[in-house]
Length: 513
Image 1: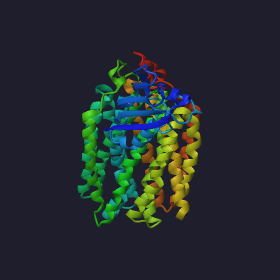
Image 2: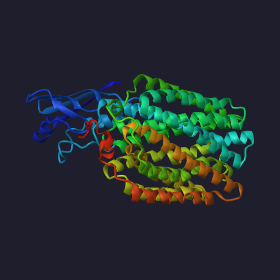
Image 3: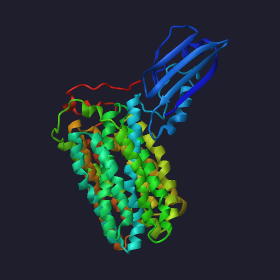
Image 4: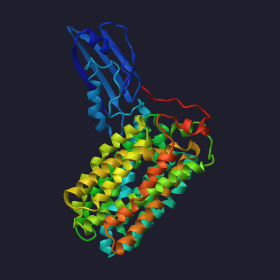
């Protein structure tokens, strides 16, 4: 966390003077410290900065504006450094626009405070760790299976067993509702990378599967608790935005796993080195242990363990099962398809994944903001079918069309993800939000297991990849129908409006500009 400054010199013109001497109301809300007509000073009244001051002074026929600030966003402060600096330095420009600038496109629709910025950064780092541990087996399983001489059926069974390990994560979901999110997240942030790294020493494929059937669910527990904390900490108009930030961080964590994949080409057993990289994420565990606070809503008085809304859970579970029935095999078998059908080596697979999936982060930014501003349901109904068709095409064609369709599927799917993901935490009260998130994650994995087993058996019987992926893609139609007919619109609504049982005490909406 460094002190930065943005200094601009403007001509002393009436319109500019009026604008510069007016309090900001965009990413920061200012309060005036002086009444001097030739010198203005402002401090932060509300906003994300750890320290903030803006001064305007008259020097001859010019106005000198200087903004000094410190922004505390762990891990990802570098990503926002240039946009924040540029935005703070353009206060006097564009006189044809309103004096009180709207938040820029890259920021949350709501104004966030310093605590929320801190939590957002820590959760994004945790998302990278979670995504790495969740992606690792998917990326390395083909190389491990080849090393151990495992066929299509054994390969798909291994993937299903690892996903079935979700039962290990469910007690942590219940525990988070009892003792708090912070304490449980601290534990799984340490345990997930340590146990996952044990895969490097597996003497057999079943042993590798066993280590990942424990480590991966712990990473999933971290993931669904991140979603809970995001929902409970972020303002009402920025929950999907925060989900998109978490998804981008997850993409980066998964991308690091992909970038480590060329280690598998070093020689026999080279895939084991990729598992050792997991230990890096213990640095994130240290930071979460030191700085992550308990959520405001959990600390506030709330009803403990209220009954689970069975209807809401049923419709969300249906969507989770059907979505993952397609997504799980499409992602898990991608490397096997590229290796067996297209003849890619580990380095080319990594290049393909990074080239086609990493830019999808742009879709996440777009999707998160649109979901908060325009709403969730209509966007899901448009983007899910398009993304599904593009992914199916990528399993059916070769060359440039394969690369382009995979990129398009990831990009459009990225737009849909924040709107879909945010529902899991929004539609349940504080007292069982963790439990619901865990059970919905388990439901998604049940769908994934079904998809994996079906695809594995059909491939073993001679079906093509295009045929089997097309078959499981039908489940995505159910997703669209359920969302359009049964999902409520949750954009712009407080969690307490969606879950009246939580109205024990009213929240304060920290963040509306």
